[in-house]
Length: 395
Image (cartoon, rainbow, N blue to C red):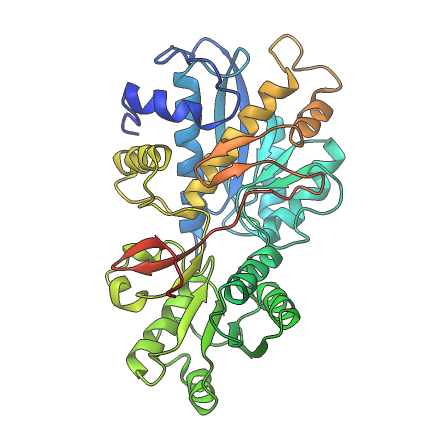
């Protein structure tokens, strides 16, 4: 891996979690410190590999930054990230492998079905589990040892509905969704419930799972129905691949061009696409991370990521990055050191610390409730001229 950061970037980004109230020691060689192993589980290959690689790469940058400032409580962080190929049973097998290799905390899973399989066995061991990107509401279970960085699907749908209602953009929305690992059904149901409670009307359109998502004709039947009963706005509760396919069909058809689009995880990260300027112009996105945000912390991370991997980080990378900083802050808050890391109450202290910390991450200022949910504030941006822009309603 290329050298990730200049010393200046390390200095800036080392303060992105709350415990850095004093000036960090930059450039310290932490290689002699005791290892603190963070086990990672997610897809690095197969169909979902892009998402897991983003999480891994963002997390690795955070590990190297923290180690370059002297580690945490006498530890250097070590990320041991294993490829689940997106398969929950493989994820369980890898969990046991990581335990055998001295895993102290689990970063994962990347997808909700992996996390759903992992949370019961992690709970049996009392292990702290921080999922960067598992959004299904029940993925964390009820055991109390699981926490998430991202918003839940229910919260995503509710944020979008309230944004439209608060800004009086329309009272008539069509929701397009598919029931897959990206949580479209849950988002759509939450959106409909919240929007109708605000006095709006919603028409719901499901994309059958057996439909392909890689051709412009995939959504012709849905678009035909929308043309017959045009909405004022469309909420896309779709995966990135599905969102892109829909937007292509929508743009090429032309008949729906006045209709505004709002979406969340399916639209994030698409700005780097060659077709993005025309496909996404005027689109609203519920997002926790914008690579073009005018923030020193964000731009330092983006520069480091581009230097290391030759591409622009997406929201999955940002959530992976913030997950490591959350674990580091929890470790600091719990007062775990090499001298007491093997005590019987280690796991209890790590889990308990998560509800007592605040992390100033690149996806927002975060704290956590006992059910594992983040209190990070919501943000809705509008895409204008290929950039995320703060929305200001015209008077």
